Image 1: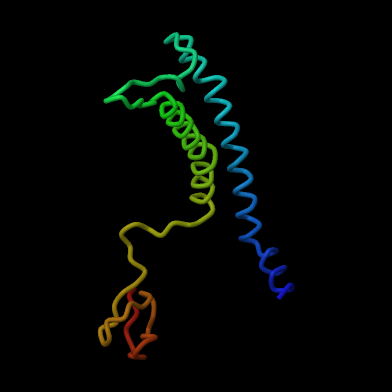
Image 2 (image 1 turned 180 degrees about the horizontal axis):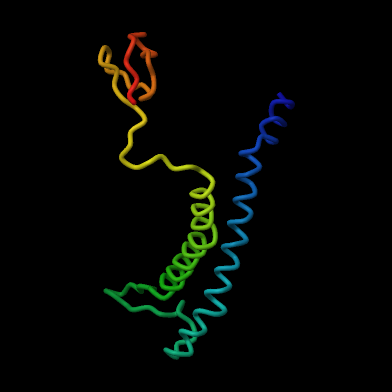
Length: 137
């Protein structure tokens, strides 16, 4: 059982997940610092309010603290923007260049006239019913 556990831990996707969690935690700390120490300070300079966490209003005797929500919302938007522009967009660009795309509108599959199973267009025999089929030119 110990050997299986070691094999499980050393499998690639477990290590990739661990690296992703660590990178996400560090990235979150960087974005939180950016929001609290830079972005909110610019907003403070413009609006004159030194701390958004103190913003609140009272409704039927209950305090609605929307300032903390605003800070968290700005952090979320900047984090997702950073993830998109620094991780997702470059990976999509590299993937698009490395992985050949199939021509849009040109199907590489067709139906077997005998059993209606999808088969490759260039196939001369159906893999399901073994019927001989003339390949599409």
